[in-house]
Image (cartoon, rainbow, N blue to C red; front, side, top):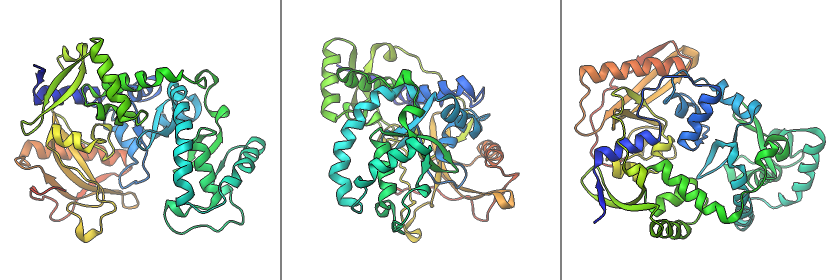
Length: 402
């Protein structure tokens, strides 16, 4: 019979693997910040900035001394981190560039099939001219290319041909992001951005083993589907085959993990991780980015924590259950609620529109004090000097799914 991992140890193991067990203190720059990114695997990038951008919020929630210039130095000066694609745009350790070269080849085939349907014609004709221009004149952004082209007013599918070409060349590895101006990507030739030591491709036969092995260690435990989805680098079939082979070699074992409602799911786990005694998480309350790596897999978070989260950015306002951009709230090993908060920097105020506790969670005096302390810290991080609670901010728990 597979060994059972009860829900509480499973949560603790998962949170510890994502650097969410210890208090969010300690150094948050240089090698310490790089090591944090290595520990959690990747940091998703997103443009929404109601309080702070996703990548900054993810790092701040783990090291509250963190400030964005520290990440910018690692990306743009030290070149120990770089930006590319996992399940979405993400910041990664630069040592993974050799693995990603196989992804570049795969994505070139995938994008060719889809982008010709989605985008305007003509972007392929821009490849050579853009590469030649960058080689001669240096890095460019989308505002620097496409002279004379009709600029779209719609979404990403309405990019002008030169912008589409830039994104294609980045996604397929010919270009790399050398920096961001504000949030705008600035592209350069890959050989000018990625250090030479990291540009050699990893042998193809090693990619699946690396992807599955590292994913399982970052997750702590997982199904083959969760392993495949972690980096989004290998197929579900390849992950299943790897799990069977690793199981036969005795490297991993099957286990059952208990969900928040007592349900059970079969997973794989390394022997040494199974033997770990994960630490009890700090009781400190913290506010997480909706794109936090621990919440990336919404189904896994719902199974493990009983926390249903769906982002409502694209939901018409009258149909939203909570709000445009609502932050999950973690306390110890529980996701205890979500909060609608926004920074109004011109007014110097972080304004709280609503806090919804999870079913069975009360906003006690102690929990309120912890929430207020975290909001004070978040206000300082967002460049605000005070927190304002709007009328009716204390909400009732909602039993239906968000």
